[in-house]
Amino acid sequence: MSRPDKRKANQLREVFLQRRYQIYPAGSAYIEIGNTKVICAATVEDKVPLFLKGTGTGWLNAEYSMLPSAPISRTHRELKKPSGRTAEIQRLIGRALRNVVDLTAIGERTITLDCDVIQADGGTRTASITAAFVALVEACESIYEAGKIFPVKNFVAAISAGISESGEKILDLCYEEDSTAMADCNVVMTGGGELVEVQITGEKKSFTRADLNELLNLAELGITELIDAQKDALGELAWRVGRVG
Image (cartoon, rainbow, N blue to C red; front, side):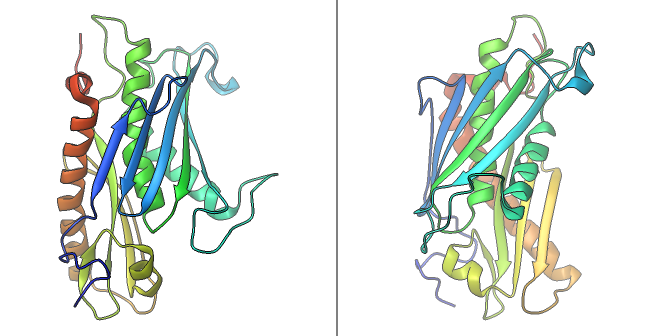
């Protein structure tokens, strides 16, 4: 099978990941995976939802949006409330990042991660998770007190894998591949190789347990590369992750 951009089946698109992309948020990052481009920013506020007041525990949530001109065909702005798809992606990003955060260690604060897609060519939710993690670490550094627990316990990243129209297992689907895939799988995984979330759908036919295992193995390869990119982008902050004191 020949992929649209001539990649091998187990090959990621070219990745560019940069932190400190914006000057005002406590943390920010910019990611390009192929033609998909996302800006992520982390804001820290000294307040928590009502159900956490007085508990000493913080909170993390995420917001996701896409510019109308980001996909191939213009979309409408979501002015009043997010669409079902947007709300589902926001929840996914929040779950993925809370999984690797010690909410007690951030105190009674709320960290909000804004993920804004400026160009979409498949994999926007997985790119958002990967870049938002970098913004999160940078934001946590701004509130970290020496000698205490660093709030981020582990690395986490995400990638897609799928079964192409011709039946081949492929990594990191672009839009053209995603739109014709027989099965599409989004995988979120920690730096320790533990699964946080697996979203898989048989788009045009069912798939076997063996198919799923192959897709998970492909995703693990891609996520390992993405975590290396996160470490490179974080530079001297990478060693903070998972540290106490």
